[in-house]
Amino acid sequence: MKKTVSFSTRGQRADIGDLAIYRMLPNRYAQAVGPFVFLDHIAPKQHNADAPRMETGTGAHPHRGIATLTYLLHGEAEHFDSAGHHARVTSGGIQWMKAGNGVIHDENLNPDPGEATGLTHALQFWINLPAQHKAEAPAYLAVQAQEVPQKPLAEDKGWIKVIAGSYEELTSPIPSYSEQFLYHLHLEAGQQFSLDTAPGVEYAAFLLENDAVLNNDKHQAGEFVEFDRAEGVLEVTNESYAALDLVLFGGEHYGEPIVAEGPFVMNSKAEIAQAYRDFFNGQYGQISYSKANPVA
Image 1 (tube, rainbow, N blue to C red):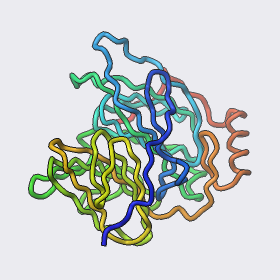
Image 2 (cartoon, rainbow, N blue to C red):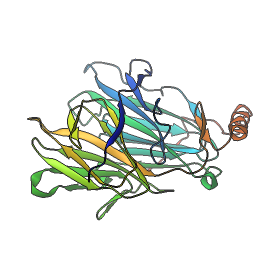
Image 3 (cartoon, rainbow, N blue to C red):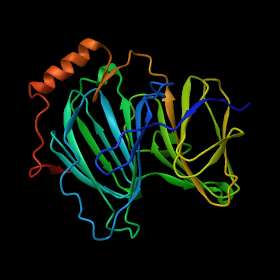
Image 4 (cartoon, rainbow, N blue to C red):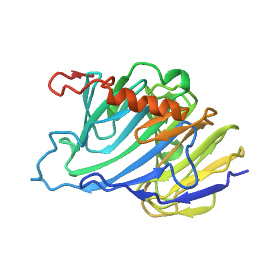
């Protein structure tokens, strides 16, 4: 039996500077999918070859109670935070930061010097931490493209990358605090991919730049699609004459209360208030751009 689509949406514009951003999650239908409570699609942007590179960040800001995960489809992202972490990740790589009990971070986004496309294109997720991990110290991990687990699909149908969680024998280096998965699926023209789902696990898809058929329903590029909670098969079909790319993500239901306000995701309003007090009292530290410790 195939899973059915609960809803689909195209998100809301939430631009930063000259970057076109579409906020896909949360939306009017869903607050979370598994541990994922936030998804921004940083739309593809073509940069002129003579355009100046961004040398400073887009704006330092705090987080608490979550881990951020940025999957860089095209471009180069540079990260700084108040715990002293600093790294650059290029096309195909991942940046993961556990905000834990509070951190300030900043990042910039530029074209990848190793690509001739001049493109920037990325996805940013927030992963809600279980209550017991919200009080832990911040941490950071930079995963370059060659370190992301990937395998070809049978019969040359395409390939799959494991950004978070596991798929068959592949396991992502991104830490998991509850059951979670995030896959980048590349499916060649006329091909089909099936995923057997598990009970108690929530599933969603985001179509990057191509249309796709999901369990017999046609969906367009830029759509966020969530599936029902019933156990069944999740089937992706590419009916076009070009390859398609999409992400599949989700995980076990987050059973604790979710209270989100601004950059903080906690379990109660009192904890949100405390997160703001601690931030304004300077307890998250400051970014020292010149002294940040490089992360291998």
